[in-house]
Length: 318
Image 1: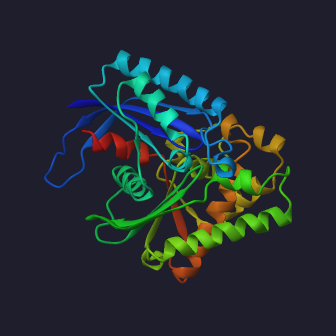
Image 2: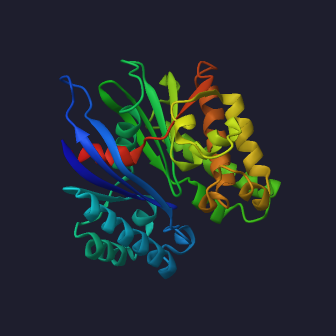
């Protein structure tokens, strides 16, 4: 058994998983993770990056503060190996070296700015590690983040095709959805961006081959909580649930059309997602509509996973 610490630093949140990794019980099986600590802080590292191409100082300060807290937890729990992964916002920022130097000083490890393809592979590994095996049937994992969304088609043998595109809840909110609630014109402009990005992903990933769709990351899990009308956010109630596409699309539409105050009043809504979940709903709705179309109606449901790239990072350092 090995104790590891994985950090996923995205556009909206920074997350920590300290876990014990248990060796695979049979040849070819995936190692098993036992959570010790799982934490999330919304730091909005990608604040303004889509418009300026640079990290804002206040966003760096928030991220460094969370990382300092995580460093203390890692020491406290004795993790022997650490991997820090940064994704979309850091790929885009010209001044990323300030971020890299700061993280190295705080954690004592070199933060990795991974490519979209690497992000996709880690997301698939994390999601598939805790879901029932579908054998050779192609599973599509969609990781809807703050700055980018990854489309990953894979099966029991691993990743078959993957593509990362620059659509996410923070990016679409800052670029288009500025009113409260957004106007029809703003929604149409955002949908045009999302549709173009899905078409771009489809040139690499054969979406029509998907037999099962799995959605991961905070936007998708929050949309699922809304679809289930949960009295509070409950990972146990959300993880592994399979819902009709129509139910999920309706939940997306409701969140998109709500005012900020109405979203903030929802009992399962994290305060750091209130202003961007509408855009998350817009992206997820368009993805589900496209999948229903390209599969000829064969895909009628989607599965939500609470396990994603963070678990994939932990497994990668075991």
